[in-house]
Image 1: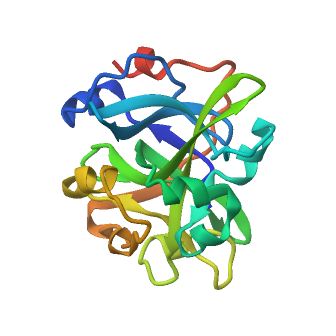
Image 2 (image 1 turned 120 degrees about the vertical axis):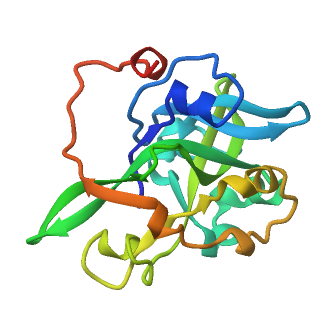
Image 3 (image 1 turned 60 degrees about the horizontal axis):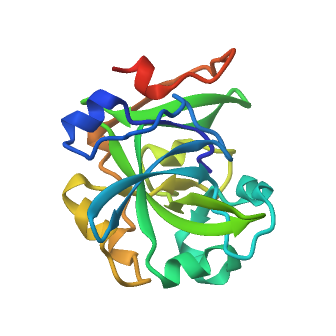
Length: 219
């Protein structure tokens, strides 16, 4: 399960010719943290500040986001939290520099980062939702995941056993297709990412004294 990632930087946003991000965001995101989500509106691609962890229409508190930051693509229709977003084709992407997974070394978990070898940002498939809690409009999103038992890189992560998961990476050339997709059947996007384009390494967790705006740090 992916519970921690670094959003794209300003230079990566410019490199990919994406719309301007007009708000600050922290350099590492955890469940219930806020980050920029890319989606497609009637005006084209847009960014929205959202909560990491999907908050469904019927929710009465934000705490549910701690349980809904990942969504298994195999069981989306079975989970009330995700049904409305899937039914209405609310597809977006997390644009990320790096995401983190646990790798067990000598029986102990280590935080490992997965990133592109060329340093370019990449896209993780997402479902997003908009709801209202106590008169506050809440925008939120979840990462979609897939089975990774046979993936050369992702099968090395998580606790020892037969359950291995990976985020679903949307290839750059299919970004527009995903953002405008109008079917709940997302099987054609459920593919393990090309391991030749990615690398991973041990990345010890850093303790930050206070949140740091991403746009200020990575200009």
